[in-house]
Length: 209
Image 1 (spheres, rainbow, N blue to C red):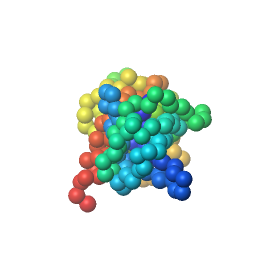
Image 2: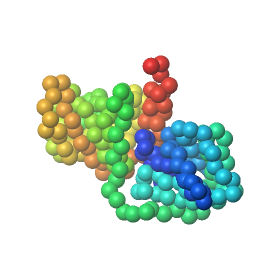
Image 3: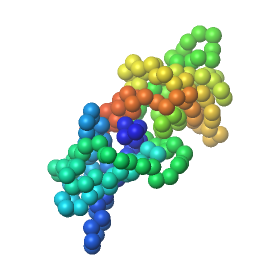
């Protein structure tokens, strides 16, 4: 479940003390075989005798870690997998907006026409099983409601996703060069897709401004 946390707005870590409450926003999450590593915007300043809480923005997942179950170094925290975790409430899937300046893109293959055609589109937002994309008006005819697609590339990398994407929404806003399209997946996206997107976002963050 931790691997399905959104790419932006992953969640937060906090510690409640007798006279204050420290809250840290998670900027990156690495899920390893037996542990997790969290990165935050500022260095940790936690009391080692008190537990901490972690909340991830996937099904509002929350868990508690005792002092012996986590370690911190500057703005990184490593921990074992929690013994217990719970969702605070049932809620719709979180749709995460990507940074405005991002150049993340997908290549979609049409499944509704007589022959396969690969179309490059820009990613606007993403959830566990849905996508918001920008499509060039040159390819508008292929994105009619209930048209079907497969993801064949992510940011130029070959990856055939198992989920079949269906056009559920076409933006009513007029724009000369592109249209906005909402796609719904038949299955949740794979961990690999989210991992690649995280890598690409990291590259863009470290690019020269």
